[in-house]
Length: 275
Image 1 (cartoon, one colour):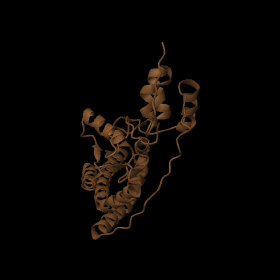
Image 2: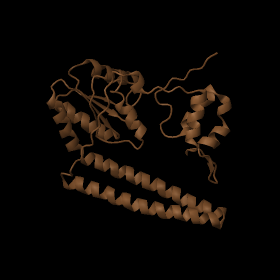
Image 3: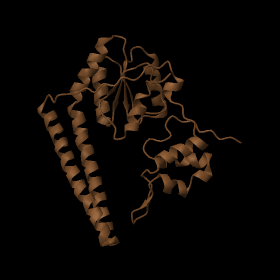
Image 4: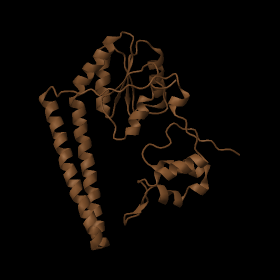
Protein backbone atom coordinates (compact mmCIF):
# COMPACT_ATOMS: atom_id res chain seq x y z
CA UNK A 1 0.00 0.00 0.00
CA UNK A 2 3.03 2.29 0.21
CA UNK A 3 5.74 3.09 -2.29
CA UNK A 4 9.09 4.47 -1.18
CA UNK A 5 11.85 5.45 -3.56
CA UNK A 6 15.12 6.04 -1.72
CA UNK A 7 17.98 7.47 -3.75
CA UNK A 8 21.00 9.68 -3.42
CA UNK A 9 20.97 10.52 -7.13
CA UNK A 10 17.42 11.10 -8.35
CA UNK A 11 18.51 13.40 -11.16
CA UNK A 12 21.96 14.07 -12.60
CA UNK A 13 21.31 16.18 -15.68
CA UNK A 14 17.69 16.91 -16.53
CA UNK A 15 14.07 16.50 -15.33
CA UNK A 16 13.39 13.61 -17.75
CA UNK A 17 15.59 11.43 -15.52
CA UNK A 18 13.03 11.86 -12.72
CA UNK A 19 10.10 10.72 -14.87
CA UNK A 20 10.00 7.05 -13.83
CA UNK A 21 10.11 7.92 -10.10
CA UNK A 22 7.33 10.47 -10.48
CA UNK A 23 5.30 7.99 -12.52
CA UNK A 24 5.62 5.36 -9.80
CA UNK A 25 4.78 7.62 -6.86
CA UNK A 26 2.23 9.97 -8.41
CA UNK A 27 0.98 8.86 -11.86
CA UNK A 28 -1.35 11.86 -12.10
CA UNK A 29 1.69 14.13 -11.94
CA UNK A 30 3.66 12.23 -14.59
CA UNK A 31 3.05 11.37 -18.24
CA UNK A 32 2.87 13.72 -21.17
CA UNK A 33 1.97 16.70 -19.01
CA UNK A 34 5.17 16.31 -16.99
CA UNK A 35 7.35 15.94 -20.07
CA UNK A 36 5.82 18.94 -21.79
CA UNK A 37 5.78 21.20 -18.74
CA UNK A 38 9.16 20.44 -17.19
CA UNK A 39 11.35 18.73 -19.81
CA UNK A 40 11.34 21.50 -22.39
CA UNK A 41 9.51 19.27 -24.87
CA UNK A 42 10.21 20.41 -28.42
CA UNK A 43 9.36 18.90 -31.77
CA UNK A 44 12.42 19.21 -33.99
CA UNK A 45 10.68 17.93 -37.09
CA UNK A 46 11.91 14.37 -36.55
CA UNK A 47 10.18 13.71 -33.24
CA UNK A 48 9.94 14.98 -29.69
CA UNK A 49 13.01 15.95 -27.69
CA UNK A 50 12.72 15.80 -23.88
CA UNK A 51 16.34 16.58 -23.00
CA UNK A 52 15.64 20.17 -21.96
CA UNK A 53 14.37 21.78 -18.76
CA UNK A 54 11.64 24.29 -17.98
CA UNK A 55 9.65 25.70 -15.06
CA UNK A 56 12.13 24.29 -12.54
CA UNK A 57 11.00 26.40 -9.57
CA UNK A 58 7.46 25.15 -10.08
CA UNK A 59 8.68 21.56 -10.40
CA UNK A 60 10.63 21.89 -7.14
CA UNK A 61 7.54 23.22 -5.37
CA UNK A 62 5.21 20.52 -6.71
CA UNK A 63 7.63 17.74 -5.82
CA UNK A 64 7.97 18.98 -2.25
CA UNK A 65 4.21 19.39 -1.90
CA UNK A 66 3.48 15.86 -3.07
CA UNK A 67 6.12 13.11 -3.18
CA UNK A 68 9.59 14.40 -2.28
CA UNK A 69 11.29 14.68 1.08
CA UNK A 70 14.87 15.79 0.64
CA UNK A 71 17.57 15.47 3.27
CA UNK A 72 20.99 16.94 2.64
CA UNK A 73 24.03 15.00 3.76
CA UNK A 74 25.04 18.01 5.88
CA UNK A 75 21.72 17.76 7.76
CA UNK A 76 21.86 14.06 8.67
CA UNK A 77 25.59 13.24 8.73
CA UNK A 78 26.76 16.07 10.90
CA UNK A 79 29.93 14.21 11.87
CA UNK A 80 31.28 14.41 8.31
CA UNK A 81 33.76 17.21 7.69
CA UNK A 82 33.23 19.56 4.77
CA UNK A 83 34.86 18.73 1.48
CA UNK A 84 37.97 20.69 0.62
CA UNK A 85 38.65 21.01 -3.10
CA UNK A 86 41.94 22.08 -4.62
CA UNK A 87 42.60 22.83 -8.27
CA UNK A 88 46.19 21.94 -9.11
CA UNK A 89 47.48 23.84 -12.13
CA UNK A 90 50.12 21.99 -14.10
CA UNK A 91 52.63 23.72 -16.33
CA UNK A 92 53.13 21.73 -19.56
CA UNK A 93 56.58 20.29 -18.96
CA UNK A 94 57.26 18.77 -22.38
CA UNK A 95 56.79 19.52 -26.06
CA UNK A 96 54.08 16.85 -26.21
CA UNK A 97 52.14 18.41 -23.34
CA UNK A 98 52.46 21.93 -24.76
CA UNK A 99 51.25 20.78 -28.16
CA UNK A 100 48.29 18.86 -26.71
CA UNK A 101 47.18 21.82 -24.61
CA UNK A 102 47.56 24.34 -27.43
CA UNK A 103 45.70 22.13 -29.91
CA UNK A 104 42.79 21.62 -27.50
CA UNK A 105 42.57 25.34 -26.77
CA UNK A 106 42.57 26.33 -30.45
CA UNK A 107 39.96 23.74 -31.33
CA UNK A 108 37.67 24.88 -28.53
CA UNK A 109 37.86 28.50 -29.70
CA UNK A 110 37.21 27.52 -33.32
CA UNK A 111 34.32 25.29 -32.25
CA UNK A 112 32.61 28.10 -30.36
CA UNK A 113 32.76 30.29 -33.46
CA UNK A 114 31.39 27.52 -35.71
CA UNK A 115 28.54 26.71 -33.35
CA UNK A 116 27.59 30.38 -32.98
CA UNK A 117 27.40 30.74 -36.78
CA UNK A 118 25.32 27.56 -37.19
CA UNK A 119 22.91 28.57 -34.41
CA UNK A 120 22.46 31.92 -36.13
CA UNK A 121 21.64 30.04 -39.34
CA UNK A 122 18.96 28.04 -37.48
CA UNK A 123 17.34 31.23 -36.18
CA UNK A 124 17.35 32.82 -39.67
CA UNK A 125 15.95 29.64 -41.24
CA UNK A 126 12.86 29.79 -39.01
CA UNK A 127 11.52 32.56 -41.22
CA UNK A 128 12.27 30.66 -44.44
CA UNK A 129 9.98 27.69 -43.90
CA UNK A 130 10.17 24.20 -42.43
CA UNK A 131 12.44 22.76 -45.14
CA UNK A 132 15.17 25.36 -44.61
CA UNK A 133 14.79 25.12 -40.84
CA UNK A 134 15.12 21.31 -40.82
CA UNK A 135 18.23 21.52 -43.02
CA UNK A 136 19.82 24.12 -40.71
CA UNK A 137 19.02 22.04 -37.61
CA UNK A 138 20.53 18.94 -39.27
CA UNK A 139 23.75 20.85 -40.06
CA UNK A 140 23.98 22.05 -36.47
CA UNK A 141 23.44 18.52 -35.09
CA UNK A 142 26.05 17.05 -37.40
CA UNK A 143 28.57 19.73 -36.46
CA UNK A 144 27.92 19.23 -32.73
CA UNK A 145 28.54 15.50 -33.07
CA UNK A 146 31.75 16.03 -35.02
CA UNK A 147 33.01 18.62 -32.55
CA UNK A 148 32.15 16.45 -29.54
CA UNK A 149 34.03 13.50 -31.03
CA UNK A 150 37.08 15.59 -31.87
CA UNK A 151 37.10 17.38 -28.51
CA UNK A 152 36.89 14.01 -26.72
CA UNK A 153 39.93 12.84 -28.71
CA UNK A 154 41.90 15.98 -27.88
CA UNK A 155 41.04 15.76 -24.18
CA UNK A 156 42.24 12.16 -24.23
CA UNK A 157 45.59 13.30 -25.63
CA UNK A 158 45.83 16.01 -22.97
CA UNK A 159 45.10 13.44 -20.25
CA UNK A 160 47.91 11.21 -21.47
CA UNK A 161 50.31 14.16 -21.75
CA UNK A 162 49.81 15.24 -18.14
CA UNK A 163 50.13 11.73 -16.67
CA UNK A 164 53.77 12.18 -15.51
CA UNK A 165 52.76 15.17 -13.38
CA UNK A 166 49.66 13.41 -12.05
CA UNK A 167 51.86 10.51 -10.96
CA UNK A 168 54.34 12.91 -9.37
CA UNK A 169 51.51 14.48 -7.37
CA UNK A 170 50.34 11.02 -6.25
CA UNK A 171 53.88 10.28 -5.06
CA UNK A 172 54.03 13.50 -3.05
CA UNK A 173 50.68 12.79 -1.39
CA UNK A 174 51.53 9.19 -0.48
CA UNK A 175 55.03 9.96 0.76
CA UNK A 176 53.64 12.71 2.98
CA UNK A 177 51.99 10.08 5.23
CA UNK A 178 53.21 6.45 5.13
CA UNK A 179 49.79 4.99 6.03
CA UNK A 180 47.74 7.23 3.75
CA UNK A 181 45.51 5.83 1.01
CA UNK A 182 44.25 7.69 -2.05
CA UNK A 183 41.53 7.28 -4.67
CA UNK A 184 42.37 8.25 -8.25
CA UNK A 185 39.68 8.93 -10.85
CA UNK A 186 40.10 8.78 -14.60
CA UNK A 187 37.88 8.58 -17.66
CA UNK A 188 39.79 6.54 -20.27
CA UNK A 189 40.85 2.92 -19.85
CA UNK A 190 44.43 3.49 -20.99
CA UNK A 191 44.82 6.35 -18.50
CA UNK A 192 43.50 4.06 -15.73
CA UNK A 193 45.85 1.28 -16.82
CA UNK A 194 48.90 3.54 -16.91
CA UNK A 195 48.20 4.96 -13.44
CA UNK A 196 47.71 1.45 -12.05
CA UNK A 197 50.91 0.20 -13.67
CA UNK A 198 52.99 3.06 -12.26
CA UNK A 199 51.38 2.64 -8.83
CA UNK A 200 52.21 -1.05 -8.91
CA UNK A 201 55.84 -0.30 -9.85
CA UNK A 202 56.01 2.05 -6.87
CA UNK A 203 54.84 -0.72 -4.53
CA UNK A 204 51.47 0.81 -3.67
CA UNK A 205 49.51 -2.37 -4.56
CA UNK A 206 46.74 -0.61 -6.51
CA UNK A 207 43.29 -2.05 -7.18
CA UNK A 208 41.33 -1.09 -10.29
CA UNK A 209 37.61 -0.77 -10.97
CA UNK A 210 36.29 0.09 -14.44
CA UNK A 211 33.41 -1.02 -16.61
CA UNK A 212 35.54 -3.97 -17.73
CA UNK A 213 35.37 -5.63 -14.31
CA UNK A 214 32.88 -8.29 -13.25
CA UNK A 215 30.74 -7.84 -10.15
CA UNK A 216 32.97 -10.26 -8.24
CA UNK A 217 36.08 -8.30 -9.25
CA UNK A 218 34.35 -5.07 -8.30
CA UNK A 219 33.57 -6.34 -4.79
CA UNK A 220 37.08 -7.75 -4.37
CA UNK A 221 38.69 -4.44 -5.34
CA UNK A 222 36.58 -2.46 -2.87
CA UNK A 223 37.14 -4.98 -0.08
CA UNK A 224 40.90 -5.02 -0.61
CA UNK A 225 41.12 -1.24 -0.55
CA UNK A 226 38.97 -0.97 2.56
CA UNK A 227 40.68 -3.69 4.60
CA UNK A 228 44.23 -4.32 3.33
CA UNK A 229 46.74 -1.78 4.66
CA UNK A 230 49.18 -2.62 1.87
CA UNK A 231 46.66 -1.52 -0.80
CA UNK A 232 47.23 2.22 -0.88
CA UNK A 233 45.74 3.23 -4.24
CA UNK A 234 42.27 2.74 -5.74
CA UNK A 235 42.08 3.62 -9.44
CA UNK A 236 38.54 3.90 -10.78
CA UNK A 237 36.62 4.90 -13.88
CA UNK A 238 34.51 7.92 -12.98
CA UNK A 239 31.24 6.34 -14.05
CA UNK A 240 31.91 2.69 -13.23
CA UNK A 241 33.22 3.45 -9.73
CA UNK A 242 31.00 6.45 -9.07
CA UNK A 243 27.97 4.73 -7.54
CA UNK A 244 27.10 1.90 -5.20
CA UNK A 245 30.44 1.51 -3.41
CA UNK A 246 32.06 2.83 -0.24
CA UNK A 247 35.73 3.82 -0.17
CA UNK A 248 36.04 5.42 3.25
CA UNK A 249 39.53 3.98 3.80
CA UNK A 250 40.64 7.16 2.02
CA UNK A 251 39.64 10.78 2.33
CA UNK A 252 41.81 12.02 -0.53
CA UNK A 253 40.49 11.83 -4.11
CA UNK A 254 42.59 12.85 -7.12
CA UNK A 255 40.95 13.45 -10.49
CA UNK A 256 43.46 12.69 -13.22
CA UNK A 257 40.65 13.48 -15.68
CA UNK A 258 37.20 15.00 -15.42
CA UNK A 259 33.90 13.71 -16.75
CA UNK A 260 31.67 15.73 -19.09
CA UNK A 261 28.88 15.66 -16.46
CA UNK A 262 29.56 17.56 -13.19
CA UNK A 263 27.12 15.29 -11.32
CA UNK A 264 29.29 12.26 -12.11
CA UNK A 265 32.31 13.98 -10.58
CA UNK A 266 30.39 14.74 -7.39
CA UNK A 267 29.14 11.16 -7.23
CA UNK A 268 32.63 9.77 -7.52
CA UNK A 269 34.10 11.90 -4.75
CA UNK A 270 31.21 10.94 -2.50
CA UNK A 271 32.49 7.36 -2.43
CA UNK A 272 34.89 8.66 0.24
CA UNK A 273 32.67 11.36 1.73
CA UNK A 274 30.18 9.14 3.56
CA UNK A 275 29.82 7.10 6.75
